Length: 156
Image (cartoon, rainbow, N blue to C red; front, side):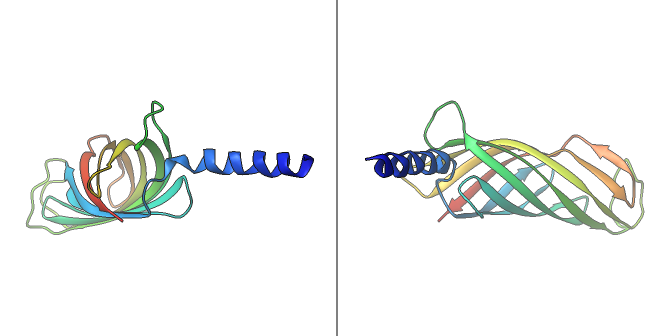
């Protein structure tokens, strides 16, 4: 009986901790100050890697994020998440950015993210809303607060 109780308690904690993940991989569109493509893949029940390929000011930015997910407001399929990562971006001199003027540059920096997502049950899609501030370390040092987005992903 004691072994049964230990196994039961262990299984209970495994199932309780696995509640954040409702899908393995999702791919879709991200719309906000930087528009692009997002790919999220869970590496465990509550941890995911997200890659974002985005454009702005006729340039290209690649971002990689490590995220931790958990159920939000005791609502099934509604999860909040936060995480950290990095980015590299490339722009040429035929764009206009009020902060930089006309010039070619490359930036490298660190990113944070906090957001909430809902996995729609009848169809294999999820929708997320996030805020992703970042700090450029190389290229032009500066903190940017304006990187929020709405993403829609096909999940499988």
